[in-house]
Length: 263
Image 1 (cartoon, helix red, strand yellow):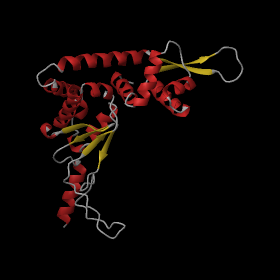
Image 2: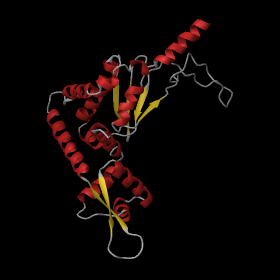
Image 3: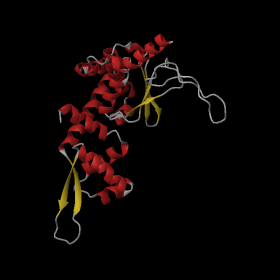
């Protein structure tokens, strides 16, 4: 596993508020804890806690050990925070410190934060090379790997990959349902954020970094970066990316041209 993949895995694991709560408990605990003790202190069902512990362990953020005290029966499985969790906590401390410094700018740090995000996007240039014909897929892949849990929304009027205009279909009440329209720009819902706690404290800076990242990726894919919009916290745990222009994959466009010629 590369360092980038490991970091992405940790970000994905920490995109859950519950998992961050479990990790923070283990980091603050002076002794290893088992799943029952964690469940009692965070107020979650033990089965749910075991799932979160497995996810955190898989991301390398915690470690498990078997308690062998000589007692009969199944040995207790104890968990402690691993070195990677301390590393991530230090990164979040640095993130908050930088956000605080940028927030002193006249614009609240937005301009410099966007530029920082664009520099971040440049690190994906090699991966994005030659991907312009894949539509929104490369952007979604990167956001997923970074832990944003992206979900491509299908606005009324759009069917991703459709080979041409889609006509209205009868609804159950006999009326015509709204027809998907391939001209509608895509919307990407971000169901998680590995920097959510930081973003709540300094949204102008943290969310602007993410906007710069998305704009930089859009530009690498041949789109107008200025048309890209990030709407933070449209719901308690939801942010939205609204893109502009046509993001239809090349194969769908070829199919559309083929249908037009056949007609």
